[in-house]
Structure formats: C-alpha cells, structure tokens
Length: 226
Image (cartoon, rainbow, N blue to C red; front, side, top):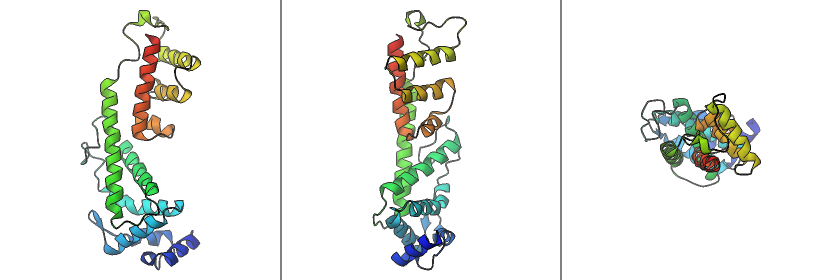
C-alpha cells in the first residue's frame, strides 16, 4: 500500500509527500461543504488515479466527512432523499454506495470540483431511487388477491398469507413466469419482511433497479394467480 501511495505521489504533484493512505485522507481538509485548496487539488488527483480500485477507495474515504454533512440521519433529508418509512442507516449506506459508483464512473477524468460532482450525482441518483420507491409503494397491491377463489393456488384456512405466497412463487418459477432472482426479491420483501433496499443490496442491485424489478415481478405473479 505504501508503495502504491509513493507511486501516486510521484505521478501527481497534488499528492506529494503522501506516502501513506492516512496522509492522503488527512490532506483533504474540509471547510464546511468545501475542501481546502490543497484538498481540492488532492481530490482532482485522486479522481484521475481512480482507475486503480485502491485509489477509488481512498477517494471515497476522503469524501466521507463531506457525506456526513448531508444530514441523512434526520427525518427529512435535506435533498428530498429521505422518506418517513426509510431507515436512516439504509439512506446512509445507499448514499455512500452511490458516491462510490460515481467515483468509478468518472475514474480517470480531470475535474476541477470533484466534491461537488460526486455529491450532486450521488444525491440525484439516490433521490431518483427514492422516487421509484414511492411509486412502487403507491401502486403495490396485496399479493394475496381479494378474489382468492379464482386463484390457481387457493388460500385455505390452514395456510397463512406467507405460506400461500411462498407456494405461489415456487409455482411461478417452475412455470417460467418468474426468474429465480425475481422470486427471491419478492420472497425477501414480502415473506421475510426485509426492506426493499436491503433485498436489492443482497442481490447486488442498485436501489432504483430493485423497485422496478419488484413491481414487475409482483405484477407477473398476480397476473398468473388471477
């Protein structure tokens, strides 16, 4: 790691005398929402170097103090990202993940205001994901249809809603109406009761994508059960 830092310092004037990761992180001093002049140059240099995954991780580490100022732990997130039903720590995790994704997208680029670029892109994408969540929740129907008598898998008195749903998911996978991934998403959110964002993280999906996938899977499940 020290050898890698010395190589970065040799390539980038803004990182001179930074032979250790902790020195790189401390080089970026924050003055409110903005980095110092030296910190701005260091962030620009790290983004150019971020094609190296290790440099990308160091850049993310330097951005954490800035991300903390986004007030993601209050009930109403300042950028409209937070939702009353969203766990605050889920918002924090998603915000950090979106920041890292932005670093990887712009790795190797020469940007003057890296902090603004990363924070704006991360919050915009997370806000879009939360909007998708609201739309998903607004159009979500009960997965135990009211017209159960017409359902292919009847809900008997001895079968709970969770048991009915698990059986319906298994039938949907066997009949190729749902993929295994789609079924696992619905099972995690509806049977296990996990937050959709957590289900998406377990499946390696972005927050926005999981809500679209869940909505599509549930529509297909209800169509087949009708």
